[in-house]
Image (cartoon, helix red, strand yellow):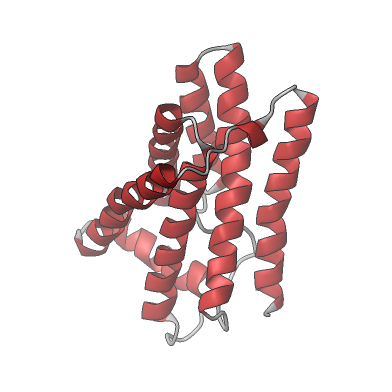
Length: 198
Protein backbone atom coordinates (compact mmCIF):
# COMPACT_ATOMS: atom_id res chain seq x y z
CA UNK A 1 0.00 0.00 0.00
CA UNK A 2 1.45 3.44 -0.93
CA UNK A 3 2.65 5.39 2.08
CA UNK A 4 0.40 8.37 1.31
CA UNK A 5 -2.65 6.07 1.48
CA UNK A 6 -1.49 4.84 4.88
CA UNK A 7 -1.19 8.44 6.06
CA UNK A 8 -4.70 9.27 4.88
CA UNK A 9 -6.12 6.17 6.59
CA UNK A 10 -4.31 7.03 9.82
CA UNK A 11 -5.63 10.60 9.71
CA UNK A 12 -9.22 9.55 9.12
CA UNK A 13 -9.19 6.86 11.79
CA UNK A 14 -7.45 9.34 14.10
CA UNK A 15 -10.50 11.58 13.78
CA UNK A 16 -12.59 8.68 15.03
CA UNK A 17 -10.29 8.21 18.02
CA UNK A 18 -10.47 11.96 18.71
CA UNK A 19 -14.26 11.73 18.57
CA UNK A 20 -14.32 8.95 21.17
CA UNK A 21 -11.94 10.85 23.47
CA UNK A 22 -14.08 14.00 23.23
CA UNK A 23 -17.21 11.94 23.78
CA UNK A 24 -15.80 10.54 27.02
CA UNK A 25 -14.67 13.99 28.17
CA UNK A 26 -18.07 15.59 27.56
CA UNK A 27 -20.27 12.70 28.60
CA UNK A 28 -21.52 11.79 25.13
CA UNK A 29 -22.22 8.27 23.89
CA UNK A 30 -22.15 8.23 20.09
CA UNK A 31 -21.86 4.45 20.08
CA UNK A 32 -25.47 4.32 21.28
CA UNK A 33 -26.62 6.17 18.15
CA UNK A 34 -26.38 3.11 15.93
CA UNK A 35 -29.33 1.06 14.71
CA UNK A 36 -28.45 -1.79 12.35
CA UNK A 37 -32.04 -2.48 11.24
CA UNK A 38 -32.25 -3.28 7.52
CA UNK A 39 -34.44 -0.25 6.85
CA UNK A 40 -31.64 2.10 7.82
CA UNK A 41 -29.27 0.43 5.37
CA UNK A 42 -31.84 1.07 2.66
CA UNK A 43 -32.24 4.70 3.74
CA UNK A 44 -28.47 5.14 3.63
CA UNK A 45 -28.24 3.74 0.12
CA UNK A 46 -31.09 5.88 -1.18
CA UNK A 47 -29.84 9.00 0.61
CA UNK A 48 -26.55 8.69 -1.28
CA UNK A 49 -28.28 9.28 -4.61
CA UNK A 50 -28.77 13.08 -4.25
CA UNK A 51 -25.07 13.52 -3.47
CA UNK A 52 -24.08 11.41 -6.47
CA UNK A 53 -26.50 13.43 -8.60
CA UNK A 54 -24.74 16.57 -7.39
CA UNK A 55 -21.39 15.07 -8.40
CA UNK A 56 -22.72 14.39 -11.91
CA UNK A 57 -24.17 17.90 -12.12
CA UNK A 58 -20.87 19.48 -11.14
CA UNK A 59 -19.13 17.56 -13.92
CA UNK A 60 -21.48 19.06 -16.52
CA UNK A 61 -22.03 22.65 -15.41
CA UNK A 62 -19.77 25.26 -17.02
CA UNK A 63 -18.61 27.88 -14.53
CA UNK A 64 -15.26 29.36 -13.51
CA UNK A 65 -15.46 28.15 -9.92
CA UNK A 66 -16.39 24.64 -11.06
CA UNK A 67 -13.45 24.64 -13.47
CA UNK A 68 -11.22 25.62 -10.54
CA UNK A 69 -12.66 22.77 -8.49
CA UNK A 70 -12.13 20.26 -11.31
CA UNK A 71 -8.54 21.45 -11.71
CA UNK A 72 -8.00 21.10 -7.96
CA UNK A 73 -9.29 17.53 -8.08
CA UNK A 74 -7.00 16.68 -11.01
CA UNK A 75 -3.89 18.36 -9.64
CA UNK A 76 -4.21 17.56 -5.94
CA UNK A 77 -6.62 14.72 -5.22
CA UNK A 78 -5.80 12.35 -8.06
CA UNK A 79 -2.00 12.38 -7.47
CA UNK A 80 -2.65 11.68 -3.79
CA UNK A 81 -4.20 8.36 -4.79
CA UNK A 82 -1.69 7.36 -7.46
CA UNK A 83 -1.18 3.61 -7.33
CA UNK A 84 -4.32 2.96 -5.27
CA UNK A 85 -6.61 0.15 -6.40
CA UNK A 86 -10.33 -0.25 -5.75
CA UNK A 87 -10.01 -1.78 -2.28
CA UNK A 88 -7.59 0.93 -1.12
CA UNK A 89 -10.07 3.56 -2.27
CA UNK A 90 -12.79 1.63 -0.43
CA UNK A 91 -10.74 1.61 2.78
CA UNK A 92 -10.09 5.35 2.54
CA UNK A 93 -13.79 6.05 1.94
CA UNK A 94 -14.81 3.79 4.82
CA UNK A 95 -12.28 5.34 7.19
CA UNK A 96 -13.50 8.82 6.20
CA UNK A 97 -17.10 7.84 6.74
CA UNK A 98 -16.48 6.37 10.18
CA UNK A 99 -13.95 8.88 11.49
CA UNK A 100 -15.57 12.06 10.24
CA UNK A 101 -19.16 11.14 11.03
CA UNK A 102 -18.27 10.06 14.56
CA UNK A 103 -16.59 13.44 15.08
CA UNK A 104 -18.82 15.89 13.22
CA UNK A 105 -22.26 14.33 13.64
CA UNK A 106 -21.79 11.99 16.59
CA UNK A 107 -19.87 14.40 18.84
CA UNK A 108 -19.87 18.01 17.57
CA UNK A 109 -23.43 18.20 16.26
CA UNK A 110 -24.85 16.11 19.08
CA UNK A 111 -22.88 17.86 21.82
CA UNK A 112 -23.68 21.39 20.65
CA UNK A 113 -27.24 20.39 19.90
CA UNK A 114 -27.79 19.15 23.44
CA UNK A 115 -26.18 22.19 25.06
CA UNK A 116 -27.30 25.05 22.78
CA UNK A 117 -29.88 23.73 20.34
CA UNK A 118 -30.17 21.34 17.39
CA UNK A 119 -30.11 24.15 14.82
CA UNK A 120 -26.87 25.55 16.21
CA UNK A 121 -25.33 22.09 16.35
CA UNK A 122 -26.31 21.46 12.74
CA UNK A 123 -24.89 24.72 11.37
CA UNK A 124 -21.74 24.73 13.50
CA UNK A 125 -20.83 21.14 12.64
CA UNK A 126 -21.46 21.78 8.92
CA UNK A 127 -19.22 24.87 8.94
CA UNK A 128 -16.47 23.01 10.77
CA UNK A 129 -16.86 20.15 8.31
CA UNK A 130 -16.40 22.64 5.48
CA UNK A 131 -13.34 24.20 7.11
CA UNK A 132 -11.64 20.82 7.44
CA UNK A 133 -12.11 20.41 3.69
CA UNK A 134 -11.24 24.01 2.78
CA UNK A 135 -8.55 23.17 0.22
CA UNK A 136 -10.21 25.75 -2.04
CA UNK A 137 -13.16 28.13 -1.78
CA UNK A 138 -15.35 25.94 -3.96
CA UNK A 139 -14.39 22.85 -1.98
CA UNK A 140 -15.31 24.64 1.26
CA UNK A 141 -18.75 25.59 -0.04
CA UNK A 142 -19.52 22.13 -1.38
CA UNK A 143 -18.26 20.40 1.78
CA UNK A 144 -20.33 22.74 3.97
CA UNK A 145 -23.45 21.96 1.94
CA UNK A 146 -22.65 18.26 2.22
CA UNK A 147 -22.25 18.73 5.98
CA UNK A 148 -25.69 20.36 6.16
CA UNK A 149 -27.21 17.49 4.19
CA UNK A 150 -25.59 14.85 6.37
CA UNK A 151 -26.52 16.77 9.50
CA UNK A 152 -30.17 17.00 8.48
CA UNK A 153 -30.14 13.31 7.65
CA UNK A 154 -28.73 12.59 11.10
CA UNK A 155 -31.37 14.78 12.77
CA UNK A 156 -34.08 12.93 10.88
CA UNK A 157 -32.88 9.38 11.54
CA UNK A 158 -30.92 9.79 14.78
CA UNK A 159 -28.71 7.04 13.42
CA UNK A 160 -24.97 7.38 12.79
CA UNK A 161 -25.05 4.26 10.63
CA UNK A 162 -27.04 6.14 7.98
CA UNK A 163 -24.65 9.10 7.64
CA UNK A 164 -21.58 6.86 7.81
CA UNK A 165 -23.00 4.75 4.99
CA UNK A 166 -23.88 7.80 2.86
CA UNK A 167 -20.45 9.36 3.45
CA UNK A 168 -18.68 6.11 2.64
CA UNK A 169 -20.62 5.39 -0.55
CA UNK A 170 -20.31 8.95 -1.84
CA UNK A 171 -16.56 9.14 -1.19
CA UNK A 172 -15.96 5.75 -2.78
CA UNK A 173 -17.91 6.71 -5.90
CA UNK A 174 -16.27 10.15 -6.11
CA UNK A 175 -12.79 8.69 -5.76
CA UNK A 176 -13.51 6.13 -8.47
CA UNK A 177 -14.82 8.86 -10.78
CA UNK A 178 -11.85 11.21 -10.39
CA UNK A 179 -9.05 8.69 -10.00
CA UNK A 180 -10.46 6.52 -12.79
CA UNK A 181 -10.94 9.47 -15.15
CA UNK A 182 -7.64 11.25 -14.52
CA UNK A 183 -5.43 8.51 -13.11
CA UNK A 184 -3.34 8.36 -16.28
CA UNK A 185 -2.93 12.13 -16.62
CA UNK A 186 0.59 13.52 -16.13
CA UNK A 187 1.09 14.00 -12.40
CA UNK A 188 1.22 17.53 -11.05
CA UNK A 189 3.21 18.75 -8.10
CA UNK A 190 1.26 17.99 -4.95
CA UNK A 191 1.12 20.07 -1.77
CA UNK A 192 1.57 18.67 1.69
CA UNK A 193 -0.45 15.53 2.16
CA UNK A 194 -3.69 15.82 4.08
CA UNK A 195 -7.33 14.92 4.01
CA UNK A 196 -9.04 15.52 0.70
CA UNK A 197 -12.23 13.50 0.49
CA UNK A 198 -15.52 14.52 2.03
